Image (cartoon, rainbow, N blue to C red; front, side, top):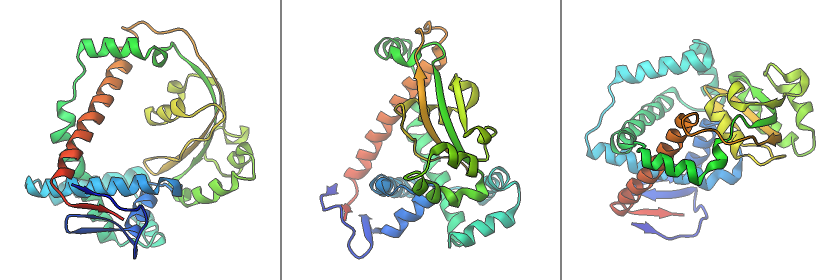
Length: 283
């Protein structure tokens, strides 16, 4: 059950979930962990932590555990991907952010438990039937144009420079995006102000970045996107639509979109069931 309350933190308390208290500092720490400095997203991340606590409680009830060697394998992969295999760089990052290694490891383990629970309750049941895919194709035809062209500018920060995100975000209020790209970006086109002109986004960027480009309005700057310790900031400079792709050519994208929508619906329904079983107070 959800208890209504004003969205104001009292004595540093952001929310109460059962017998667990989520502090405002917990929310800010989670935002930092995800590379987010935009204060307007505080409520989003507070709600994420509420959902996370509900899922962890459900995992305990289901007696789901994560063996230490599995967690250690995941940590090893993070060190390899985000810190070039150098644990000293990891330790330096933790010191800079004032996070103990014990707490960091606990968060990684919790991440894995949450992912495992989500797969068990939601993701393994997500499918895309032919009729659902056809309906998606007809209702959202603009999503399936053949090679839409976009022009974007990019600022890319390497893992060791992730802390500069806030500085860059503040500088963007008075300095040009392109000049900041030349100064800060590690992207291959930094010398050109990070500019990618008239490209098919999928040919240049990962799926996560492409989704951010797609939802960013022309002329707007995206949120920071964190991928494996690297951080992207995008400005959409222009976009040009082209003809609709045939169903067979767009099949993979249609299937992915149907599954994404169904996954969100099942996840939301699951969270609502968990909320109904737990005392929750938002401060």
